[in-house]
Image 1 (cartoon, rainbow, N blue to C red):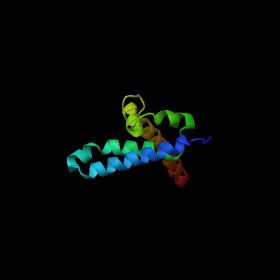
Image 2 (image 1 turned 90 degrees about the vertical axis):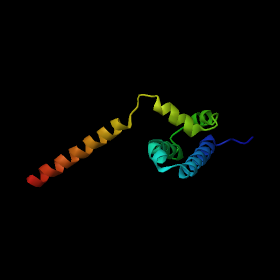
Image 3 (image 1 turned 30 degrees about the horizontal axis):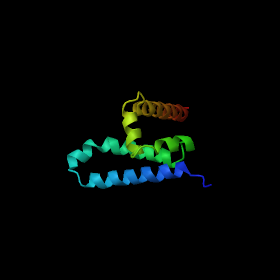
Image 4 (image 1 turned 120 degrees about the horizontal axis):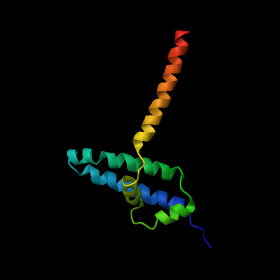
Amino acid sequence: MTIKNYKELLKKRCKNEYDQLMEEMKQLPTDVIIKRSYERIIKSDMLACIVEGFLSQEESEALLCYEKPLEYIYAEWLHNSLSCLDVMRTSLNLCANVAVKEMKSRRK
């Protein structure tokens, strides 16, 4: 009995899906490409998480039920309450706090 590596299968399918998206976008007018750049960036980040092995075998198997798992993940993400801005704000605060500490230490 062969055990399937669903994480690897999902990684390959999503990579192919992303590559197809990039090829499709090359054929679009510049204004459409700009309008869809957010989609490209988010899908790129999601693909990176998949490639890193963030998901379990079971989660990967479930996502493989979709013809275009990356599109499914993106569509679901658009409708959830999570925001990239929350991550950016947290990062900005951490960076600013480090800068304040460095500034204070230089003044001593």
